[in-house]
Structures are given as structure tokens and as C-alpha cells.
Length: 256
Image (cartoon, rainbow, N blue to C red; front, side, top):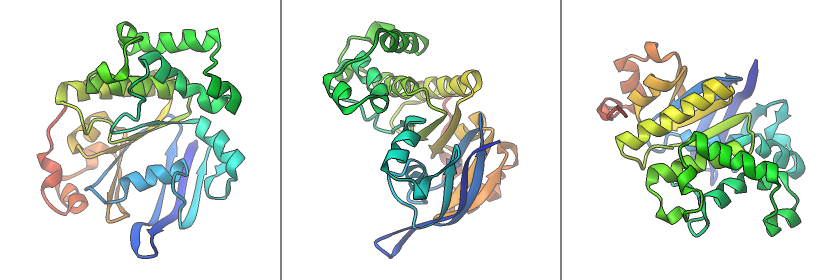
């Protein structure tokens, strides 16, 4: 059953820059999907349209029964509770501790007063520590985030996302800033979350071989258009050349 559907979605910036053109695809609940393509191809715009960080210019986007493009502020707030987001540059509050950053994943579920006061229930705190334990971060719980390595910061980002109890996790180039060893750790964790918790995951990835290794399905996008949508095993060299319009996609190394 589809949890997400794009129907002929286009996005134009400043009435001139066509970031997306007539993009259509659906994602079933529990899928692990990677979107690949060169820089500037529209990968990040797709994710930002899903959680309404940007508004699609034309077309329809449905998530979990919600018409994203027509949703008002209150409905979008409800939608965002169900969508976790993992960023390339972590998007953490460096001066706060790991556990404080993880608990921020519950802010969308709280009133403005409780959120500003930093109030969290004992159940929320216990859940945060349980998630940190699964991600191997228990010993870092009270460290400031600016004391962590890049790989540790990204695991904190994953933990914060899981605190939302999401149905969908969007990952915007989650390993682009990491070394191969840390990248493998992050991808293994996210793959396990997808398989064991049945959370749908959509990745923007620049590393073709990583997408092939981990994904159940790959969507290739070039100049804002979908040019491939299928199984990793069917992604040929010629199709990679079409997506990247060069040999670029073949030169990116594996995570190990």
C-alpha cells in the first residue's frame, strides 16, 4: 500500500529555474528507496516538497492520506510529526547534550509552552536512552554535541528522528560528510531500522554503489526529471551514464 505518491509534480523557483518537471512516483509502506542523481538535479527539492519546506508549483503529493499541497498549517504540523528528517550536516544544537538533542524529536508533539520549558515525561526520557543504546551512544548521552565525531553526530540525528515515532524518514545526503567506515555504520543502522521497525525510508544519495547495496528500489533523476525507477539489479552502466550524463556515478567509492 502506497504511503507516499507524487502525481505530475513540478517545482519552479523564481519563475525561471525548473527544479522538478512532471515527477511521478509512489512509495509503498516499508520501502527503502534511494534517489540518485548529480548535484542540482532536484533530489533535495523532492524531499522538501514532501514535508512542505517548499511548495510544489504544480501537481499533487499525498502522504498517509493527506493532500500535502492543500494542507493548512495545522494539518502540516500533524503531517510533520510522522516524518523524520536526517540532514547532511546533522542540524544539531552543538552546545546542548546528546540526550537534549534527541529529546528535541518530541517537540512537534508538545504545546509551545511545554516545548519552551523543556518538559519531557519519564517515558520520553526512558525511550530516548533506549534509542541511544541501540545506536551505541549511551556513553555519549551527556556530552555536548560539538564534542562528537561526524559519525556520532549523525547517529544522534537518527535517534532524534526516531523519537518522533515516524512513519517515514527522509535522509538528505546522510553520509556525504562522512568517511567510508562511518558511512557504513550509518547505512547499516538505517537499513536495520527499515527492516526491524518497518519505517519507510527515502534517501538522497550521491553514491551509486551505496544505493545499489542497500536499496530495494532506486529512482534516478536528471535535470528535475525521473529517468529511472526500478530495482538496483537493473541499473545498468548506460543508465547510470544517462542519469549523471557522464562517468561520475561510477567513480564514487563504496562504504565497505
